[in-house]
Length: 292
Picture 1: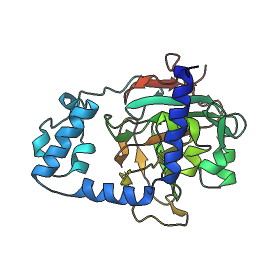
Picture 2: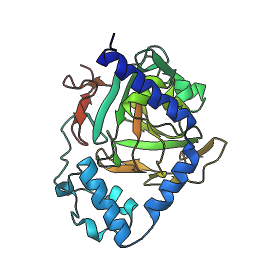
Picture 3: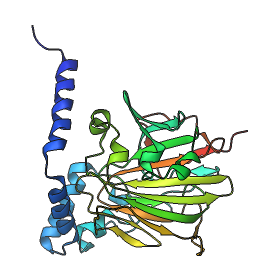
């Protein structure tokens, strides 16, 4: 009896997930970061051309479409777009990234849905801060996946004042859909940078989740957060500073791709009815409005 295509697919997914546990992820990430930072002339240009062809990157949207002009892979990967490429929707909340919707919806108490059979807690996501996590009890969440071909700058979903930034050390599993289905608590296990904001509608959290070969994560107010990669949680408080960012402005970027997880307080957001898991999204499109 021949195995069904479905059973073959399940076995393939399980193998891919198992390999995530066996790979030397820290070493791979360090090597990828070194290559991405290198200004290697023709080698860098060939690498960028290969990447554009393999992943179907739309360079027509880039402010600078000339791949030969980028001095490093990081410069190419974090390229800005044309000013008219991503208009900001007239909605209370705008999508902060290009990518695909992994999951979104209501937080069940303190449980965030990851994939079928997998949840994690808001407390785990924010690095164990129970008081912070409680602000999002029964609130809303959105998990957005950035694939290699996507624009990798992250923008503000609404106006916000930064109050805290928390670096949480962790694993470096891949964050693709297959791994999300197979690794329990993935987004609360991986290395991440938790950015806490206050807005006119209440608090929200925007979390940059690291992954295998994500060389680093950076914010506009701090610069590169990692490296260094430490074993302890690090925190910065901004209560005595006025770090205020407008809706649609850049707040950070990934140097190589990953995932954004957002938390919103209860009653703060009603998602765009056109949104659904696996749907492609663009930065600036309507993410939601205030509940009526």
